[in-house]
Length: 399
Ligand code: FES
Image 1: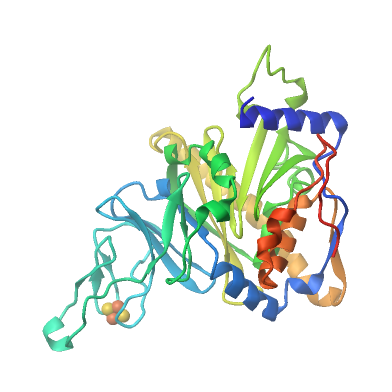
Image 2: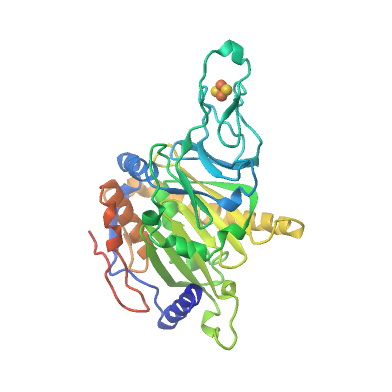
């Protein structure tokens, strides 16, 4: 049985028994953990500055000179495909005096030109132009600072530490096999970005990992097709795959009248710490990057839509309509709600929030963050969860 057929079978089972996969017990976390600036600093230092981040899909930069640029955790990045076909990740910081060398979230350039004094860099990051160089003096062989980077399963991973190393086998812990099934290289990006302001990055991440809220907060929008609270959850090291059952999955006969996967289920791959890949096993995909801001109470979500076929003709209009729909859902439903939560943190004070047994991915996120900031992240593989299918458990108990 294929991976997708197994997921369909598990979702059908969960719908039949009326339960999602579950953690062994609820878990409390201090509400103050979202707004504590010291914790935020530790998260940026021990997680974002050290681990391999999914910085782009290779299909976002399909041609030489294509780039995508954004700020994350105080670092401006540019991911660009070189004239040699290699995708590289650089700090988007001019080596003269630090201005950005891009002027858009995505674009195509033969040269990355700094606006300040027009130093220019080629698509491999090499400094190739310095106006008035005779008057400037010795510069040496410098270029944009390149970050360690590797492409796996159609996704570009990089570390923000230029001296860091990437061990994707250890980091992905099998997630790459699940990503492979999405055939990410076959997608075409609708290169119109959507930025949505959000409060603390963990409040935003909680929403992407939560299969429980879909039929409630989104009952009149994207949740109308889903069967709420019957999700599958699979963990790959710190990463999570969530399965959503669509209405009608219980009437689906996989032998007599198999339906396309997209009609009966959907998937979210959450690539720790900050990327959600929604869909992908059929014709469309949405990539959401949660970008922590310069302070604990600020983050942004950067979204792109993807399609299996080139986005031209009538599909341009469809893609723009879908982009606006998801922008409205995330801004007016998810982010409006979590801004209220962020505003309530002071009032909650020393109180706590609780994640139910039916919110195992949120439990996993907060446990993983705690392990990283405590220097214990090697223990993540000790965790698993109760599945509605098997009833087996090795779940972590509440701290
Ligand atoms: Fe870039 Fe001066 S800061 S050219």
